[in-house]
Length: 162
Image (cartoon, rainbow, N blue to C red; front, side, top):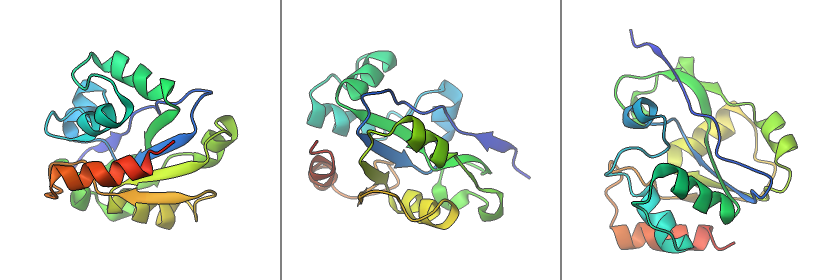
């Protein structure tokens, strides 16, 4: 049986207006304690291209760039059991969601949720509630999502039009 995995603390501050929600950090992200830590994941390349920062900058600089643009990042799941990194490998009956009521009370300027992939949206709706604000689901930035980069970028650009 797999060990219980625990997610990362949110990237958010008082300027946050948009919350990007993944499902659960990958094994590489958990090992590095950095969101989207797999270098093949397109998250940092896409957000950097849209928001105008260097996707290869040190992690804390990339985090600051997101925050400067009002973008928060978190995951739907606080904990779960999973072997590997695929969302499909998460053991469904072990999923525990993050505390969104408290998060939204603290970050009350957030007016839009952007789901990074179908699993994040499905699990939020199943485990948390109907979202309290407008949402958009974008193609996952995971390397497992084999959509053309240009198509992912276009979808993300529309979702992050802040």
